[in-house]
Length: 243
Image 1 (cartoon, helix red, strand yellow):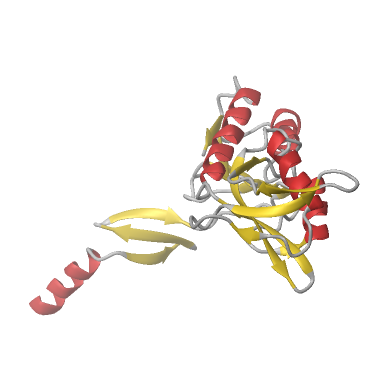
Image 2: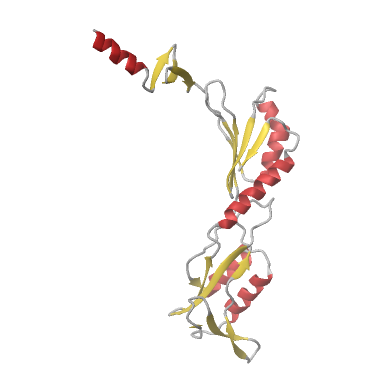
């Protein structure tokens, strides 16, 4: 009997869940915590930061019928922002809005046919001085003229057309700083360093861009998104912006 009583007391001290009056409680160190029981709403799907700001300022109060809980705007990534409630009485959150940026697909870290590469540069990169250089080299390189130059694995040399009947050897620029469309349009697109490479193939010259910043641009983009939202939501005491 004493052994069974001791086992029962020890069992009460172990983490466990129990159903009490139709609600689920989590026990740890003897203290109960209510979990579950929260009716989840269907989150709104948006694609721009400005639409999120408009919803918070103009429509959110109506959705919650005037009783707006404290909210968190979570900048989850360079392309995703979520509006969620803080913990309610049931220790659960509501995800109210899910914002996903619509960005074009940019083929990186692999070689692609010359014409497709040029089209991608024109359509998915902002104009910068290095973009103009890459376009000029990639668009005018002579077939079968790409050669390794030096032994550092980066430098290359190619023959390009410089006029109607003129060609010359040039050093392929590396690294190059470019600005692809990769985050929300309300914030500035990030400058990213790339290694620009070309090679001869049976089908002609192929080109590729390889990211050279280790993904650091993503952290900069997240902070810029958070700064934008903090400025737009300034004065709204029930909203916190986290990144």
